[in-house]
Length: 566
Image (cartoon, rainbow, N blue to C red):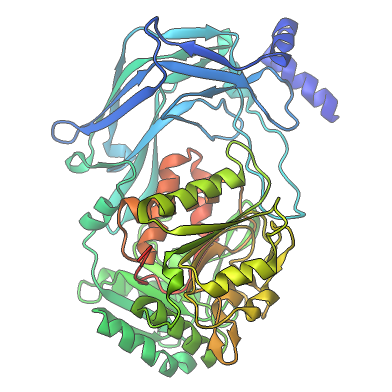
């Protein structure tokens, strides 16, 4: 069937009238108040109830609707629904309706959700836009086309809540409860809003719930200071300095050779699990040493690649549905002994403040593409940046793709002056950051100076976080590049190993920065997992959340002590 016939078929399937289509073409922003009293904001509160209960109350005063801006849409009659304090659902093809979510301790089987509402308000001839598949953050890859789930528009049933289980963290089961105070009524092509609706969630363990307060999960998880390192035998001796450094900082470090752990992915995973489950060897931090070719790597299916290299399942200790790692983990992507000594030197310099040039401790660097909308990449970067600037008083230097000063030379000048954190959001190729006025290639890293504070890099881009060791991979080069025998680049790098989607990694990066500040997180691995959990609580499509766990990896030390704005 041709594309034009497909469009007509979908329109007729939705039974959209000609008058509605015409109305949609000239539709402007409209403000709809829930009562004569007006009011601009919506209030949502979540509190612990009695025993195992959690109470969530909604008070919605206003909704804003406007014509949806969707590429290749079948009609311009779709509208976006906007409420303060509420986000729009992301389930691909289904109506994007407002929601609020919390994470509770418990499994879906043990949770019960009850609700009661007062009078509702129905808005006729209002069709919410379908949530669209995410674009990819690669330069030349094929992007997804318009998507719509016809069943949800023809026969959609009322759904006031959903329960989604992502796994457990060190024995604490975590379920997201997503609550919907509005419904799409398919038979009437209308949206029904419940301005005053109360939910009672029963069955939560000790009534525990979390919005963004992830540090409380860590407090309940009984973390310890044991640190497991697994490396090929040829690297063991070179790790002695790192082991001594971590031991001096209070960690109990065990170094195991890859060969003695079994040498294959399955054997090493079994070995890791056995140590984790034994009380006398249970650990909270883990480090793998080696690259994709000399340390076993699992290849998993994701929507962007059937061969996604991932370390995630080394550290999920639950069943096949568990996507939350139970320890904070990272990898030193190395291919020679000098790589280990250089990375260890950067970790010691960062944690011990051993550099002669310490100006970078109060400096943040941000880079953003000129793409995206609602929010754009520049708006995402502003959220990431403001977190540090407003809370820690750090300075931030931004390199925006639309500005002619966003060049490799100027970025290297900023990095050579020192920075404690760097956020990039845009496209990636595996070997470069192309979302600048002129592309920054991995070959530019060797031009940095050696004595500056080296940043933690959070990279929202495709392919740059692959474990390859080929002297070209951007993340690997930031970790292993040297100049005149001294290390340059970054102290840690967090990025995606294959093509990654547009919004979920950006939401994670915003949450990561936010959690570092709000929760006063003291270790890098804790911050990274907090960012992933933030995504789980702020993006409804569970498949996208799970893929983000598989895509993203830390190059560096998960126990790295954070020093933001010191």
